[in-house]
Image (cartoon, rainbow, N blue to C red):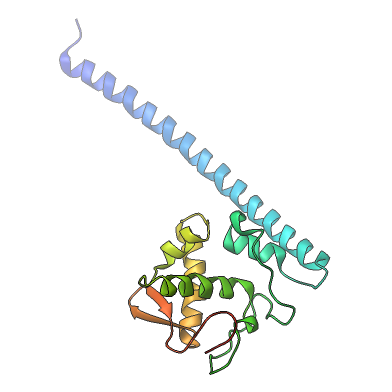
Length: 178
């Protein structure tokens, strides 16, 4: 009859082998997942480039969909004189219309203007992402936070509390800057 210690060692060895096998499988799956995510990103970039080239106004259909999420694909398009994505956000001044901003920035301002009109407080970037129908994952929230912080730095938005954003004093609805 085997000893209790011997049985325990056998079970421990079997468990260790199982753990090692599962770790190898997990590493393989992680590598496969990383490769698939890289491929997905490459296809998304390719689609954005093709959409940009094929857009009648050289516009940004794909940029808007990727940045704001699929639910917003039918959103109002930017006026002809609107800035293109990845363009600089001008410093806000009295009378400056929202149309100088890209569609992404206009949508952020509109969401915050709606909150202000309803008498509700500032929004966080996570709340904005959810309002836009985006996946509320760190990468999407960081991208949105970058845009929001740029609007704060240029005077379009205010940050009354850390991480909470609202329209800056004097910035009005989409028709004009004041």
